[in-house]
Image 1 (spheres, rainbow, N blue to C red):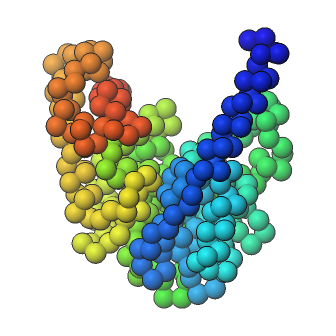
Image 2 (cartoon, one colour; image 1 turned 180 degrees about the vertical axis):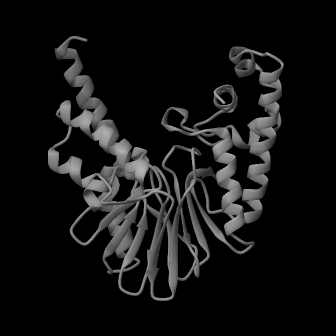
Length: 297
């Protein structure tokens, strides 16, 4: 593209993004006496207000950080001591640099740091970010399988689920408050996005749901990565749907059907498409993802 044409295009694109961010409002759902869900643009944020500190889960996109901070300030004036990334995608980690100040420690599963390092180093070479921002974007504490935090009587459990949405997913369970943040291992009311290129799989995704169901009870409030707050009954229905979808696509795969045939066969998941196929992942994308995941086993 001619540079004289590209620069105005880039300027207009930047204005459009800024305008979209200005139009975003941060809304709050109160899930318990101490836990809130913040919704804006990107992954849902979890906020736990403890005895003398705040525990935060995910931080959406960088341009929204000021709005998010202002919203948190309406809930408490206590400092954010820990910020946990449920995985590495930018709609959950985009605000890391803005929130990573001296009083705040970034926490994530081992693979999240590795993937943020890889992406950050690419951006460093391309001179898209500074060395300081590269370092501030990285989790300072990582864990392999489990990590437990304590705040007075509250126990906060972070645990790794393998190869679900990505290879670095963590769920966060506030035990006494009985709230579980599932990150993008759960897209409430819509088909999930399973990032196969980042280690995700349909089998791991279903296994993550089964693990969550072992932890929670009928009164648990669930914060999904995207969508409205949920509960155990809805999660049970959702995982049954995923298992059915896996079985349907596996049958096609076993019969020797090609990816193209499965992708274009709208009848396969028609019973779910109308209720769950209206988001980022439509029926065709869901069929393609599950087929590709199963064929790689």
